[in-house]
Image (cartoon, rainbow, N blue to C red; front, side, top):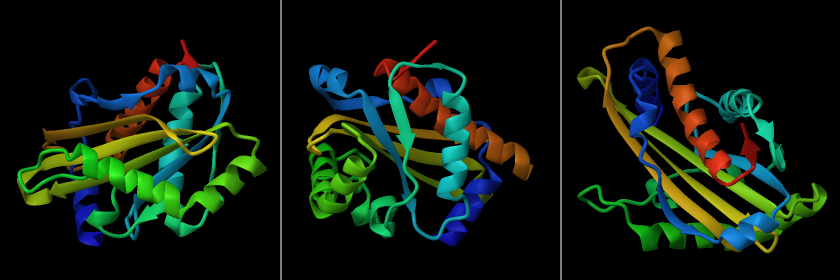
Length: 208
């Protein structure tokens, strides 16, 4: 995992946000409209170079450029089982051997995550007076010697009863010849952050 993430950080600059191709799995517009204050959790692989704090900082900067339409609270104080996954089988984003997205398996992993962590998630919502919850899963893999970036994200939104009311996924693969660490990191973070910002605009949590 460490080697994969180190490779990711070395070659991530030519990410084209226009090619993100976010695909919606399910969406309950009436239930989404009822959510007035939602928590936001970033979920990543364990033992990677970029931290959850890195992601939260970048996403926060992007969101601050828009007009809030509803309350959105970043939640940092959680157990590891809420914010990290250990293996591919634990990920929301599930693929078959040919690289095709497995909708029902992914939905099943999400449902098991919500069921297994129900007590902690319900307590987080009660303690922060939330009536909704976002979980944003992020994962990236790179073949450094071939100079390409490949990463995916998945967004889950629940209502106050932890029922899934929105679910989507996104994958991006692109070539790059950039090797400067700082430029690569900024490009990668901006791509991840723009993807979620666009979705929050679509869900009317943000306005221009």
